[in-house]
Length: 395
Image (cartoon, rainbow, N blue to C red; front, side, top):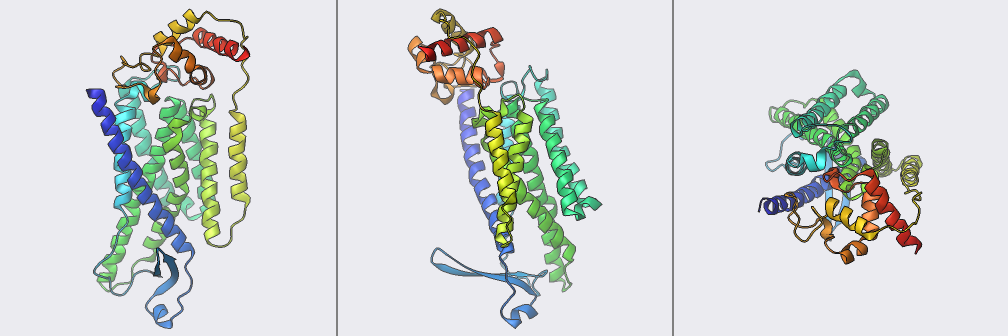
């Protein structure tokens, strides 16, 4: 019953995270687009009111006229729409999932004893330190003199993010490292909204209501953090789906793969932001696709050196039953799985033979199964499964 309740919490929280994430990213992308498409106001009266730019658009059969002020309008309208709860709920639901899956299930999804011998408590404390420390380091960096130099700041931030990816992969399972990389970036994004963007906007509104000119530095700072957020978006979205792609996080050089894909995502976003302004160079997106192609080539599965000699199926059956059916059974005995993951059941000989391709891919090629090596499969057993597969392919 506990595992069943766990699955429902997982389902509902993931659904909420997905919905609110769409809302947050959608509004973020829209306002970046809007800001980059503003044109000088056509009416002198608008210029006198403090309008710095405007844009006309059409959508869903309606015409829209959006205007942006240099600082704030002289009179704050009674109804003012804020964009913040999308970010807050995305982070809260994401953290709930992190705690539910990777912290509550640390021994399954976060810890890999081959990488580091950590207790669940130690692993969770380290993970939490990365999340909090990531924001503190980033925020101090933004407030330092480096924050005023966009190119230098970007270079330093890339080095620090690369160190983050490498460090996490030296401590946690590949899957756990990847998701925590995304959580650190996602926490920075929502903290930008909570600690910088929204407070700055509130101060600007308060100044306008007092009849004072809002401090333009508040708007500049909010804009800087908003732009940073848009460049973090695609790397975070990749991490959100990375658990489906063991070929990346299970690789020996998973940290380098993570850095390359995150950089490619940021460069793709750089290209589209520049494209909004009508000044897009193809160089960022070309580099991004070269990086992705390079990663794909680098992690291409190598041809096995195992011979195609016959293997006694009794040995295969024993390995599968001892190492796999704890989870992959019609009645799993592992408490974390109320049903066989991905619906893969390996109780009978026919089921084992039918899944030969998947067994080989997961236990030999990507080596992600058994997950966290909970059942202690040996190298000799992996080699035997490899020989079984090669013999099957050659026949």
